[in-house]
Image (tube, rainbow, N blue to C red; front, side):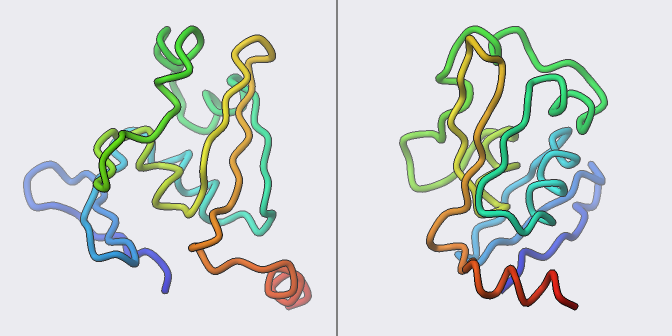
Length: 123
């Protein structure tokens, strides 16, 4: 089941309702979420510069010096806008601070498979 995007009344920020029924916002990280969600590859590597191009603004300084910024919260509910961007796209993020890049890998629970990806590309 794909995520659905709707908009909250006052804020007009996108709200994504994932397969687990939780509602979370990606806020200003919508460009990153959209890019990750629409890609068929199971593994994507993006530089900080490429991520900033998708977002349209610079990453916070903390993103380039603290790997914790890239980790999901230790709870079952995703709570940060940046981690919602990749988690709700069915991906994990592994940062390499010295190389200034991030590997986004599809999670097993996202239902992706190489065969299905090939089928999509052939359409």
